Length: 507
Image 1 (cartoon, rainbow, N blue to C red):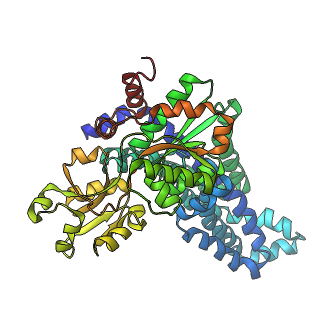
Image 2 (cartoon, rainbow, N blue to C red):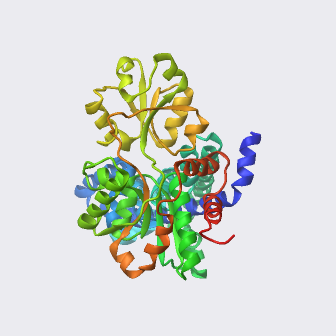
Image 3 (cartoon, rainbow, N blue to C red):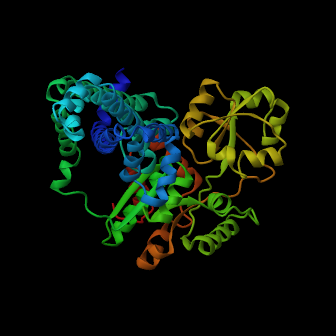
């Protein structure tokens, strides 16, 4: 508990910021879902033949995996809050729509007949009799929708929308840091409980106040969620730098930001902690971000779907740079020195027990061990798919998020994991890297990737960012990652310290 309180004290500002983002996104999604579902539900009560099909469509929307929805939306609406709100709105439709339709249908038919007998038309009967009586049921649907939305909002962090998921992802990336995970998960649960209590009060008063209760709720939601925008938003950034999940990309984009702002008047914004290569690259293509650090091997194998003509670092970079220009009209600037190639790692104890030195040595015990691979590595040709072909392996594989695999190998749930050569956890966990004598993994040197139009607009970026070309050794990168992941230093502080020590900026 004392460790958790220490983390709480250190992360208070981040917690407050992400809690507000989480709350704001959730409320906006709920308001939009309510404004869609309640009128639609009322309309369906007047046309029963299409009611079930439309309610069925909203049910199908709720079954689609949230990550799939976000990935689908990025090319159309970019990254950040917009796709997150759209996805959350879709998830929140069903409970409100179903309860609105059911609430109106279950009003006592005798009351409806009495209202008709008093000369009320359909609209007056709905507004004066049916809707007030159905309001408690409608409000119950809104409560259900809110709990669902608050829980699902944690995924918004994967596309740069912020929220408490940002802290949870940070904890997962740091080897399953339970204190960080709890720091994000507990406030999310408390927020859902608090909002449920508030909505329950509205539900109870709705039996007396009827439709006014719903209107009051919507007005309050709009004012709370978007009211701060009336007092001015954030300054518009000239450049937005994105990064994949992890300390290393975060350190690199902080270096880019510091160098650019030191030597130009450009305002730079940062969007770290995207979940996967596909997310961040799609965001670059459609213009939500302008630059992000990519690895030469990833660009070649995953983005261009090519095999390396050579295993020489410079040859791989040149092949990737030429391909990115030809295929995507993107500029790939000079790579840094470190090679964060994929590696296959196991515990030193297992390696000693079975004399494991190379990836091929795993064949002798493949029926006895379990591998923990990330989804991306498991699907890549320069990952497990290539291992199966080149090393004739058929492992029992469990796919998991990057941060979870460290925890899994520490606890003994898996015996082998995919890893990155410069990761700080390699030192912390004392892992044994199995050699790759068949050179399955091409060089993975980090380099700035951007659209050519961005470089044409700001040609000075090339000379500024190329100052890092050929710099940052593997040991330096590993040490910087260790400082962020295990000594809890900020990526910005670590990045600035390196640039000062290298004489690239003044202290």
